[in-house]
Image (cartoon, rainbow, N blue to C red; front, side, top):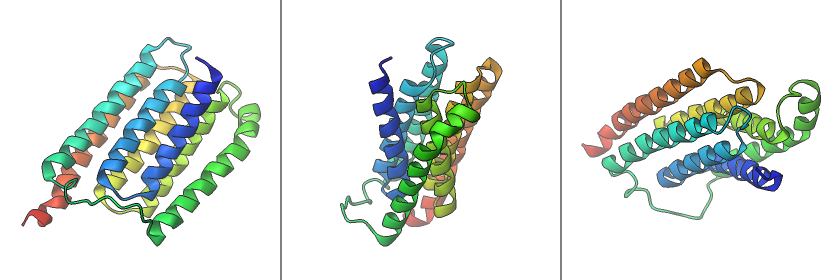
Length: 199
């Protein structure tokens, strides 16, 4: 695949992760998660063929669909008006995330040379970026949806980084199961969190 397409996918994946960290809008966050998985599919190493990358996108989009259908059935999307204004918290999270992405771009060439020589720079940059953005999201938000998105972001970054180092069918299957279990558990906690709003 063309290096330009892979670089663009890396940038879009990081921006989608940053958007999920910043904004607190149900529909935008679910859409951002789907974009992240699409970018991971493009960047994921194809040395073992396209099957591992296909598994990533199928499992990722299934996880996203589980979360989306849960939110849609609760009616929360209809109660979440769209606004272009940023709150102080969103700006702080956005600046923090942008700083982390900047650090990843600074450190990635050295890591690629000294620590992860087998990884491509795109896999390393997107993987580390998503890991750090996911961790920041886990520490910055308390609502179940954002915690689940933070967990999935962290895990997808870790999977990408690990997949660029070595391939294991057993581990890929385990990652797929963990992703789906996180999405199902997330659907339960999102529903439970929204129950008081229905009363």
